[in-house]
Length: 247
Image (tube, rainbow, N blue to C red; front, side, top):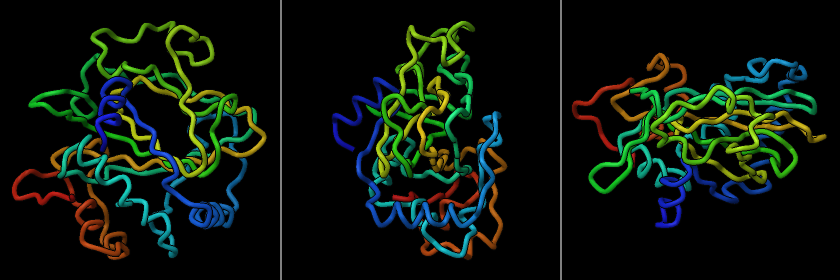
């Protein structure tokens, strides 16, 4: 993670890594989603989510879990002893309304936080968002209030509707193949989707090795599908004693 990346993450609460996935990788991942024949998303942000892709026979989505381009970022942002907390995908089509802004540095949440101590950052629940299609200016999708992960005051109610917040909300753009990593302590949300193509984002959420936002345990079926010891280590439940670094 370069000094520039560290500065921007500390400043904004997120960083964009460009061109992590190539054309062939994107084609494979999108083809796997196409094969599921998901119904079109409806006007409810939660209905746009889907899961189960880590258990699919094809290992393409499992390869994202410990992709070599993102591991150094996670080691710096979360710490070397991180674990997978939960995953899901997001689908949006033209006209989907998006969702409210949520999260923030205040009130403090022990599961999702940002602090700076000992000359480095420490984060709780941290999101790696893989863009499988373009999310460019005017399209909609992920947005946030940059810097709000360090806010000492709660987000005012009038700032939470994404469409009405012209004061401090900013869209976060990604090209297909880019990865945005952000702390869940960032105030963030989803703008209405206005593009003619479908939004496809895959979210892997990681926690420090001693912490859990979700249920904290994965079954042996998924563990047996993992290709290496590092992937299996990321599926461990939260604990502190003798926990090995992932990187």
